[in-house]
Length: 297
Image (cartoon, rainbow, N blue to C red; front, side, top):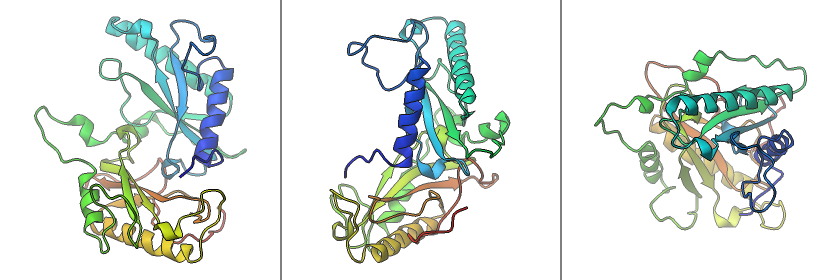
């Protein structure tokens, strides 16, 4: 599976890192020995990183996570100085990105220098003329999952364990420890998600990637799908979605339809909502399993 620089996620990262570098506050180049350091001492560094399309806000054309790496000079400094450094630099980055037509939000409970080594902003662009509809900070804070308020000594299950169990029990089986190759129905890989990206009210969340059987995988050197790939994808994704929904999970997929000739996998953000909360932004809830083109919105 090769890296594709033309996907919306990859393009978003490249464009945002290019802008961060042009603004003099970050970019891709973290090896200061390879090129002169353009960022003044004491500023810290910003870098764009992936945001799964399944979590992109409605109607966004570009989206990514911008991670802030504090300046090493503040390590060991008093808490007040560290907090001021974080707040000043995150605020300055947000203001500069907004001047370039980005919507900037902070999802979940804000990270603090007392408990974390970095902080993040979610940034995205909307089509020209579409109002940003900025959400109040209180609404975004709802994205903080209950796991962050765990009591001392409290033990909770691995947030991915239930997903593993659901996919292991499917017929045919879609997941197991040490699974090295796809079965006739494909296979699933389950990845963790940073808790600040969990859908609002989630008590468990992860990224489930369904991969087709090798017979129906796109070609390595060009975007061509074998005969029968679309039917295989539809059946395999339906099996995975059904197993997860039966286990009580909600699923969120990207707005673009999957293309067996271009995509390596069909991905879902899989999550469970606490009984006293309601699902909502960021992102969209979708469980459509067909790979066929849907009308533009």
